[in-house]
Length: 111
Image 1 (cartoon, one colour):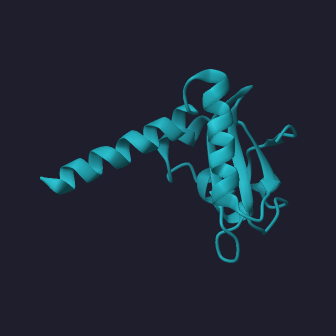
Image 2 (tube, helix red, strand yellow):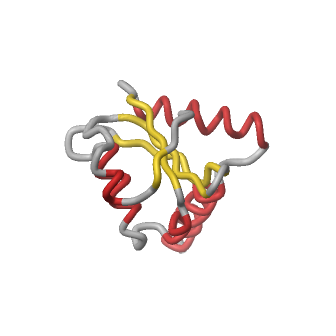
Image 3 (cartoon, one colour):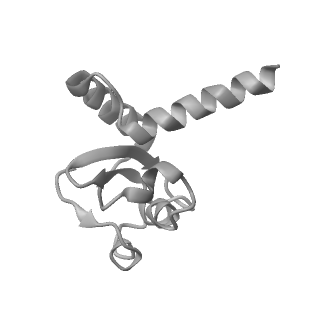
């Protein structure tokens, strides 16, 4: 996912209405890697949801996005996150925040 586009609804409108993976960037830093499974949840719909700025607070400062079509988005997302981890020793910051929040919610639900 080398090519980046400006993270704005007018630009996102041209993103594929298909399954795949995407990255949200803040300048030159990937801050989130996500997936779109296709049919009703497409690359375009996921990106537009993020662009509403209220879906996930961590991505509010995204400046660009990139995407890649994938037959198996969950597998490709996992590969990209693993590659990111192997290079940097961490996940993109918004993926880490999302994971921590999910774990905390599970722990609170177990009480």
